[in-house]
Image 1 (cartoon, rainbow, N blue to C red):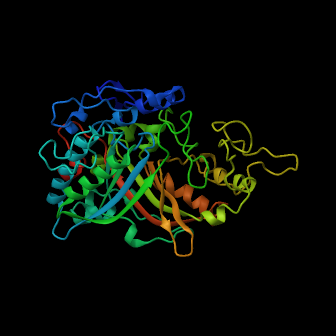
Image 2: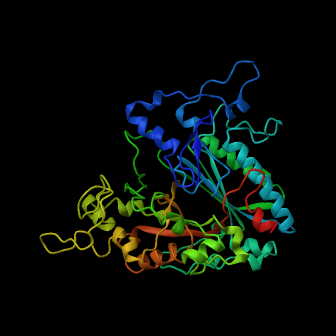
Image 3: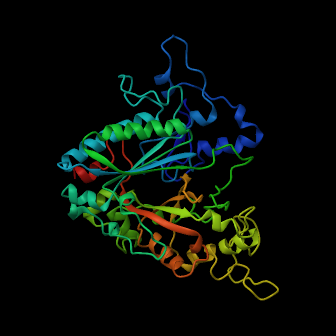
Length: 443
């Protein structure tokens, strides 16, 4: 899991399943006036210091938060939601193969490590654009994945896992092929928009002649500290979104979200299904699969519903995310509880009911989305919705069974449209001196 620290390097955050993230700690202090906190400015911020001889000014809490590039897993999977995000897919250029892909991943990993530490992309060599001048790392994460076609273009089809097979079609699909899939996928997140864009520009520039942009999408979430207390994010429908996510402290979290090694899979029984840890796929141990969907929300239609009707579509109260069966946001849903009229309090076709693990054989995924808004269409409707990103050890045991169930009668379906899609194998994290994907490309 990703780990975070302040600019002085004090350890904190989630470290391979233990502890509380620095960012969550800062967020918890928000109600008591965390906006007044000033943390040390030592570390990566020095790369942006002016040459006047004056030391850099202390960074605010948001600017000082740093996620670790190296670790068991890549950053950006268990990292708390970030305020700004970019998703970008590349296709390898004609003539680029395994050798060129390895050189690209080496460059990308090097620049990601620098930027996540709050250092210039050129590490003082004058090649940095200066877009994020004066800013700290701001929880920046850069995450890399490989699409199905990457293995064909690099001559590595024998090492392509079956879990990258194409997703089945769904009735809500209106997919644009030009904005779907891709050889390579990069997820960028940060709590500052300029820091996020800075990373996006650096990744694009480092691609050089090796890879070309296939599609790119921009997203956002609420900025940390904008609420009186840390809370689950809301989507553009106004609903609290992500309550049912698996929690890192749960005993089966790693089994559900991360691909085991061949040895671990053999001893745990986790080797069933398309994502089985065949020795040929050992390069993916500690990694995960990202399912990426651009889901347009038909907000004009949704906003015509009364709040009561919206709540019955979702199965949860809008104000606090509590299930309609009672309690608070974190109270387990009572799917059998009925009202005085004999009707189920959580309707049969409510989104929360249909998507719950109890109704899907325990299928679970870690949802980590961004909202998006790409302007107003000529007819006045907003092009807005969710850049849905979910993580799991196997999409055919996580995303697919849940989506199939939703496809057969989700009350939310008339108000959304899936417009783009992709599945990417995301390798595990790296040790110092390694680059992402090295076990695949040099194995």
